[in-house]
Length: 126
Image 1 (cartoon, rainbow, N blue to C red):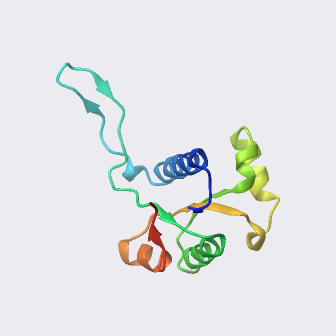
Image 2: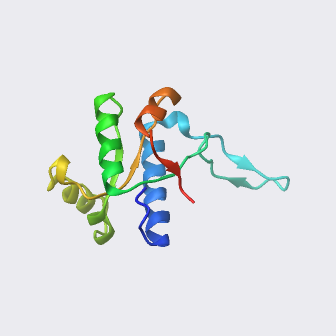
């Protein structure tokens, strides 16, 4: 995730990307929760989510690495902060060529070795 975003933007990007991963990989969805009083709650993601800090250039490199390895990335571009719905989000991304995407966040789901190669050089976000 782009390191120079406002806090609300970082939280927004992380939430959208995590939701996208669960939508694409249903096996990431955990089981429902229930408490000792018999109340039920929704599931969480079954695996930890690692969030790395990155510059714009590092996100571009991560995107290239993912695509070269056949890993489908989930993306969030700066333009999506100004849209209000999923249709407009897709249109905003479709209007920009890959090399010109103003990436603020990327998410991947891959085997650990592949993920490590794709995120090489990045540090966990503070």
